[in-house]
Image (cartoon, rainbow, N blue to C red; front, side):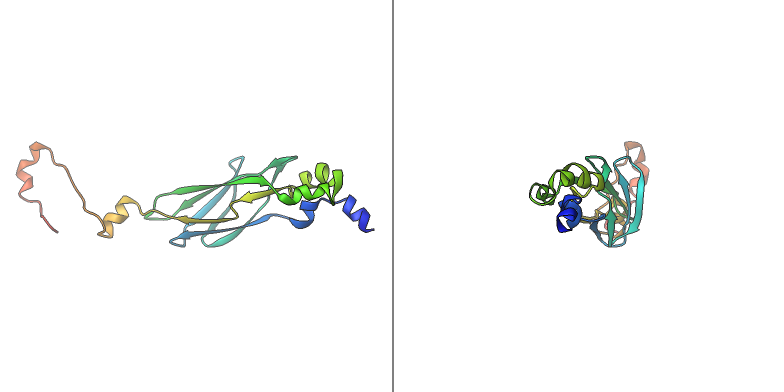
Length: 158
């Protein structure tokens, strides 16, 4: 019976059954994250921090990839890509799972792939407007020569 289970299963499928957990957080926390797959289909939306459960299979012998879009008021939008790589456990089929595991089971389940990185920690950059509003910057305005009468009214140092 053990031989039949080994012959009908894939090594990576046994080790990696199901979607991969990808921890997602941001600095500061509370960013809205939209996750898109390689077809640019929205698959999940959540607020940091969270753990996304993402399938690795796109098709037979094809891995899924993802794009994470971070948004937060007062901060610049940013994106992070999740790529895929062949799992080392897939090559365990050479010893344990045989050709059935290597050519059928693991490619059909997508278990032959891992997502990288498995943890996303995104530092969000404050937008220019937010930096100015927080009084962490100096605002410089250039006035045309035709604005001479108004220059006297400009407050310096406030």
